Amino acid sequence: MSYTTAMQEDDWLTRGVLIRRMLAWVVDVLVIGALAGMLWTVLFTFGMVTLGLGLPLLGILPLVPFLYHILFLASPLSATPGQTLFGLTVRRDEDFSRPSLLAAVISTLLFYLTLATSGLLLLVALFTVRKRTLHDLLSGLVVVRERALTPASGAWNIGQG
Image (tube, rainbow, N blue to C red; front, side, top):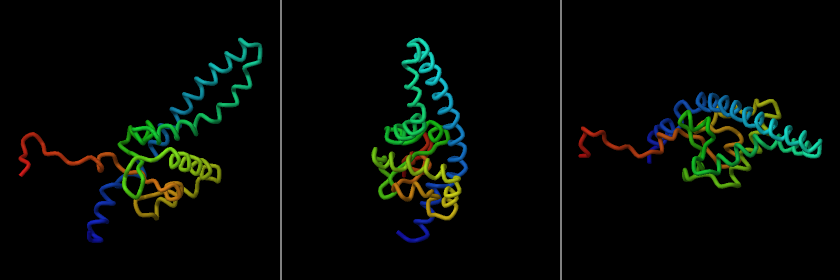
């Protein structure tokens, strides 16, 4: 494969990915907020019904964002609902297969570590091949357009010749 062809393939895989990732993140934050709010309501109500004995269960609320990302990345979708909404999928960089549970855990932990350190490390994506962030690079994952991985099929009125 020539260098030009590889660049064209990377462009096809990642064209528009950065803006889609940002929009997907906003959607995911809203979904996580709604899930955490509902879980808080259920756990708080349970805590009150048990006269305070159930209130320590509120300690699981910080796990919601981590579990959300890990479980969706390791699922058959290989993407969070926000990423799916914007036509993105997360794949292993070396062969575009679905991420393993370990890769999803590493990516998620590094993502939240990046956010905890001001989030400026996310700017790495502006300078890397395939627009990969630091947590993508270290976990061996890449975010690409789902459509770019789908084999092209002819339209109903165009021959396959």
